[in-house]
Length: 146
Image (cartoon, rainbow, N blue to C red):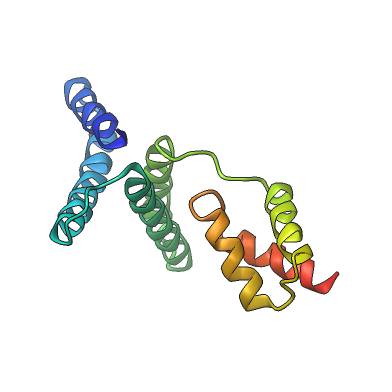
């Protein structure tokens, strides 16, 4: 499981004295553990999909922080957050390309979905975890305008 890989990498970072990797993975691991506790409270086990969802949320948080840090002139913070994103992204599966997303959206549109909301809803069902929501929205807008 992905959780075990992250645990192992925390131990490696600890042994190697890599403070940046260690602190980033510890923060992420704490969030993953919280998600696991939340899942167990409703009688379910933590899956790799749940872990990937947490990792994507962590990347999203850091991207927002970078944006705010750059607006505030804090390039040091933006750089640190960027490095953390690189560390976290090592555990994420590769996202689909824009062309692949567009192909899926066009197939759904060909099945009779024409309005933005229904097309977006169905696209996200199929592409959850495989594509960024912003890119899916752009593809949906493009297909609707065609």
